[in-house]
Each structure stands twice: as structure tokens, then as C-alpha cells.
Length: 320
Ligand code: CP
Ligand code: NVA
Image (cartoon, rainbow, N blue to C red; front, top):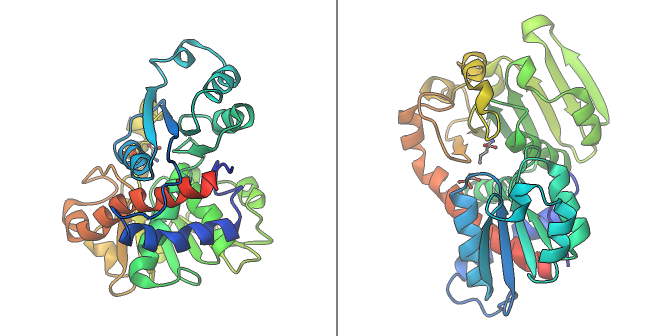
């Protein structure tokens, strides 16, 4: 029995093993010889909206022989203040696994600690591990090993999606450039936590660039200059400017992040044939323009579909 609580705590070996199983899971859809969730009921406990994560987990659980029970956190006593540790101890006696989307990372960790059943993080304010494992699988499907490649994240560089990307770069040995205003970049303490062994800064003021190196050969560069960040990149990646839970900051974020957009101009400086990815949902005209989104829709919707295949590997891994 295993949990997937974060990429921070998932070993490089486990990441590689999940990624290695995804192609076969995708190919064998509809004819899986093994039903690792047979006879099991898994609960999906969600405190935030979801289309892809909810549907891909519900379908994935069924395709592996299990049943899915969707629990909107506001419809159960959790929404009226019942402690996580009590909810976890009750559900742990009734269901066989849990997939949780919530705000605080510590809530998923507490659920895992008290429930005694495999627990999967389906997005918190700190991380979106299933998304980033899927994104790496999608990249590798068409471009081969991600080690040594350059991924440029554009937008709110301090939200869950880039933070999970950062842990992946630190462990899997690729270069992640976070193109964001200084206030939307992770702080030094975060990179220390991620295991950075070398830090240096170049430039100053608005052109300050911070470089973090990791023993895996991974590098993370935090930079305000979007053009420089995209130059020669193998992939441009973005996410919403206003994450769930940050709605009160919408006006400020739209002002601060304006310009941190993936568009045709930016793509010109990336490596020829660079991939464009978006975790979705997309807000056209903000983090990506409509023409660029539509030109890369094949990749973006492969990425969305791959949530199903990769998460089925995660579910099988969690119960093994
Ligand atoms: N990308 C993603 O997690 O989408 P949902 O919010 O629709 O689940
Ligand atoms: N950063 C986004 C991801 C949505 C899938 C959010 O948390 O809303």
C-alpha cells in the first residue's frame, strides 16, 4: 500500500516506474489482463471544482475493476467542520482508497496518516503531482527522455503546477525555467527544500535571474525576462493566472501577470517544433492566445487524455 501525496516526497525511482508503465496502460485500454482494484470502492473527496481529474479518476478506477464514490467535501460533515482525522478514520474502515482535491497540503497528509488506506493527491494549493507525471509522460511520448531537456513554465510560477514541476526537475535531471514576475516565483527556501545544492544569481533589479542546481543534473532558473526564458526551450507550458482559491486576488493577478502569455511571438524563440502544453482549463487571451492554443490543441488534449492512463498506473502502483 502506497500514497502519492506529492512529487516532493515521491522518489525518482517511483516516478520513473510510474512513467514506464503508462504506455502499456494506454495501449491495453479495454483489455487489461489485470484488475488490481477488483472488489474495491475508492472515494473521491473534492473541495474544489474539477473536470479532468474527477472524470479520469472515476473512469480509471472502474477500468481497473473498482467502483468510485464521489464525495463533494461540502456535502459530507467535513464541510461542517468534522476534523480530517476523524473523517479519515471513518472512511478508512469503509473504502479501499482515497483521491483528494483540497486546499491545504497538510490535509491530504493527515488523511493518509489516519485513514490507513492508499491516498492520492488530486491537487492541493502546494502540488498537482498527477498532472505533472502526466505532462512528463506526454512530453516523452513524442520527444523521448526529458532528462537534459528545457521546459519553460510561463505565468504564476508559485502555484501548485510549477511547484510540482520544480520537484520533478530536481529529481529527473531536466532544466525548468520559471518565467514570472519576482512576486510570482518560489522563494529560496522552497529550492532548499527541493534539495538545491548550488545557487547563484545573475543580473539585478528587473533582470535578476536566480539559478538552482540539483545533484540529479536538474536545473531551475527563475527569471522575469520571458523572451530569455523561452529561448531554445523544448516545451512552453502554462497554467491559469488565477488558481482556485485565489479568486479574491483576480484583478491584481491579471494586472501583474499580464504579458506572461504563450503566443506565436514567444514560440518563435523556442526550439523549432517545441511543444506547447497547458494543464487546462485554459483562459484564452490571458495565459495563452487562442491561435496558439488551437494550433497546439492536439498536444494539449493528448495531455488531458493521458491523465486517465497515467493515473491508472498510479492506482495500480498504490495498491501493489
Ligand atoms: N488539469 C486539471 O486538473 O483539470 P481539472 O481541474 O478539470 O481537474
Ligand atoms: N493552478 C490551477 C491548476 C488547475 C488544474 C489551480 O490550482 O486552480
